[in-house]
Amino acid sequence: MKDITKVFLGAEALMSNGSVFGPVGTACVALAAQSVPVLVCGETYKISNRVQLESFTNNELGNPANVMKGPLGDNLRLIALTYDITPASFVSGIITEMGLLPPTSVAVLSMEMNNNILA
Image 1 (spheres, rainbow, N blue to C red):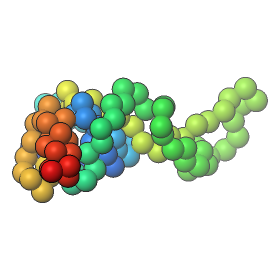
Image 2 (cartoon, rainbow, N blue to C red):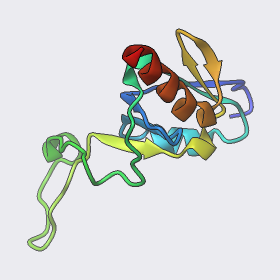
Image 3 (cartoon, rainbow, N blue to C red):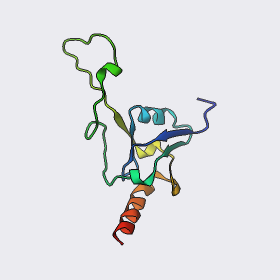
């Protein structure tokens, strides 16, 4: 990873605590890239008022055959999650149509957007 200067990731949703709901594996990539800036790209309409602390609740299940081929043991059941949560501490910035924001600003931007809708 010595030649990498930045990591760009996509987001399915931006949680109000700055964490990122993205395709499974996104959190692992962000964790491995802690020595370089990790930038997440997502439009402001993807901002959610929810806070999600783990990847199991409100997730979608994919096809387990896409993850592993071949027989499983009798007492083994394979679950293929579609999304995971990348903690805000793994993210250097979030790129939106409003510019580059720190993950801590997602909640503030969400409130501002809601105030503009209500006004």
